[in-house]
Image (cartoon, rainbow, N blue to C red; front, side):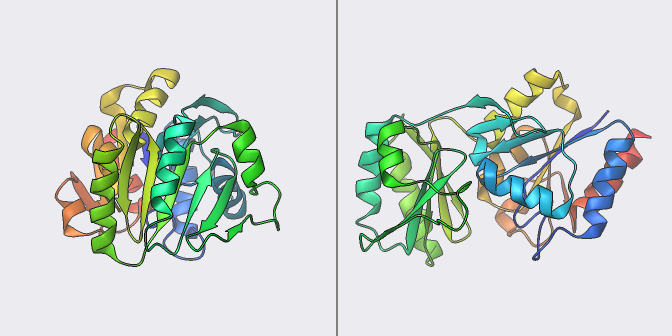
Length: 256
């Protein structure tokens, strides 16, 4: 039995939808007694929408960069949150930065905030909407994501947050954004929990990603990356492939 844990945006989905080739490869992989899961920075509800839209089959979900682990019915098995007061300090700092906007999430829903002070909840879908009042009342923050156009600033701000808020949050640079999770929470820590929960063997777990927030799981487990990833990511990968379906074809071959 092999387990493949895939990043979603930029890895499993590289266009508007997940390719039919990837969907069929996942279906065949699971039909042969293997397990497939998605490990993503997305919230539970946003990845649920993607899974349903693309008719994907999964055995587990690691969402919010490790903040919430779910079963295939989207039930939360484990949830990590930030210290609320420290998270509010971080929010105050982010408001001083030249980012386009940032979002605060409770793991299921999110509130989008613009740095000019204008706050906006996406009220078109109540499954995704979180208001400032609800946030203050519930005091549950699982992830904060900042969106910037300047990649150099992404690197600088990520480093600053890592040092200034050490012991409280973990910050991961991504393409055009910074993912901020509770301290010591990562895609790797999420997969470690899945390993114990599901009884998987460490040596049977393979991962695939395309960006810096995927490095913890690429380094910790058998790590693949997609060919359009940067050279910095490729240096960490055991194998470079064009698609998730290609990674699955390799795993099917070595397990036969």
